[in-house]
Length: 120
Image (tube, rainbow, N blue to C red; front, side, top):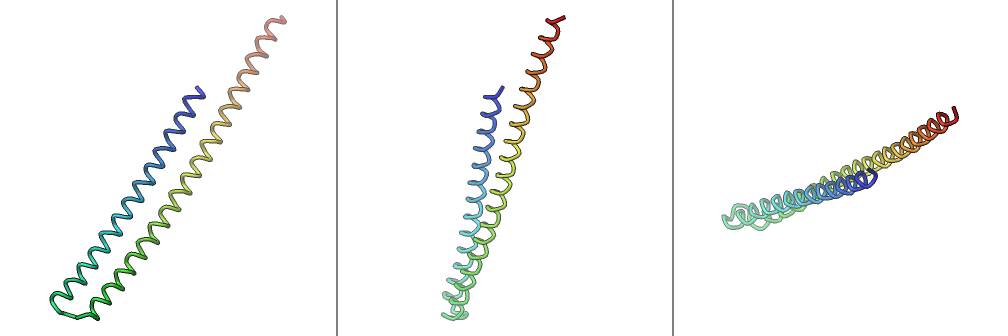
């Protein structure tokens, strides 16, 4: 039964790591899409000559701000996910310790019961 629990924990940790990797990929894609959208806006301004080089510089600065905000948001999400993952690992360890103690107590109780019955 112990090997099943350890295998389950390893599987859970692998799934959590996969979930973290997927969250990172999604955040990176969001950053890329935002950056591309802002750069397309800058190129459009240049092509139509609406604002000239000054407008393009403003768009590039906006692009930098969008990417910076997205990176900060992604970092905060990753920190939160890692904290939740650590809490889950800790809870699983505590449950394993409790289960081990219960099994030891149960074994001791059954041995004491057998020895007390044999003494009668």
